[in-house]
Length: 115
Figure 1 (cartoon, one colour):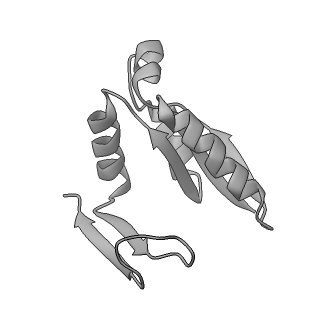
Figure 2: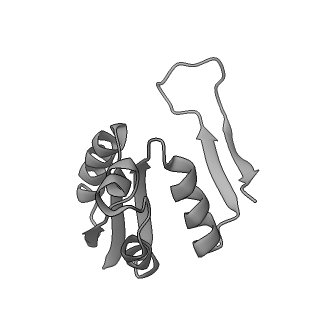
Figure 3: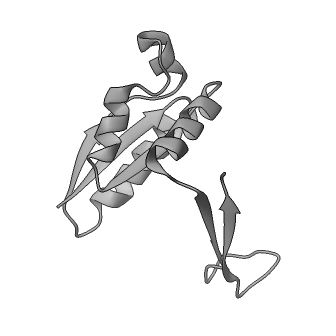
């Protein structure tokens, strides 16, 4: 079983998270979800956009799904990068069969340094 920290965050993050969880639930894998808060709404409620409790939930998990953060996005993302020693943002790019686009046959990864 894989433990996944689920942080919907703000705005569209909640909708994105619903869709992501729907897809994960359709897989033949066992997941345990632990929901946590981060972002603007969390900051309004707790005074901190990324509370220590949320950070600990992430550290105790195998993976983290993060939806979106509003005005506090930089605070949340920078703290996550520092606390978890994350220095790379990987963006895979791949053409899908049957989906039109300007280019076909794309299959590469963009590597962005976060430091």
